[in-house]
Length: 287
Image 1 (cartoon, rainbow, N blue to C red):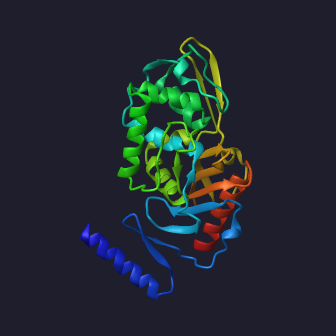
Image 2 (image 1 turned 90 degrees about the vertical axis):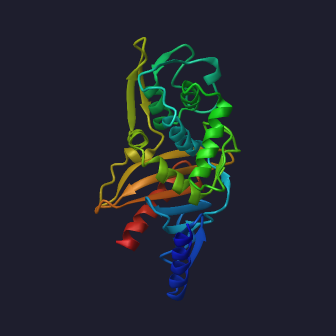
């Protein structure tokens, strides 16, 4: 820890002398490698671009301001679920406690599904009821599950992030653009989460044989735009207070990955336009 801190201080001094601003955050050095870039490049109130798997940021805009993050919360829910997974093929029956207002309803009272189908319905469709059911399927109470979410946030060093429910409907589920990027980086390290968030659609049958068709809320997965940039997946979020938000994982033609975060964009589609604008800029600016 002492060695790491000394290295960080050395890097801060080095980049300060070279004219590149740097600052220390959560025991890591974050660098704005392209000073002077206009924050008006995106409509979102807050934004950040992270080199995946690192603490190096290529863009930031109000990135340390706290706000609700809506359904982006589900990335933390998925992480905690994976640490308490009762088994992918375990049967779960949708119950009254899983019902919640907000968003499209894909699963109905009394339907029996596998835990795997709950997981995909939660992340692909951003289904709030399926997310609650996923948490309940672990055998933990909702309070116990949320407690584990907050402990996981502390473990990841997310000092401005906290949760009060698994779905993200609560405005007390808060974070910053910078910490959302780190949360997404940790979540998308898990192949199960990466696979689910990369699906434009998902089909399955309930255990009684009812066909289900789930479409992603991530419109970038449906884009036919071609080029050196590929969207690998991500997570949307929206409530009145959170605004239209999105965190996405991108890959350039050399296989390098980075994460873009936009919080409170001007509209439903603007969050995707903002995200692609940032991604295109990263490829152009950093080769």
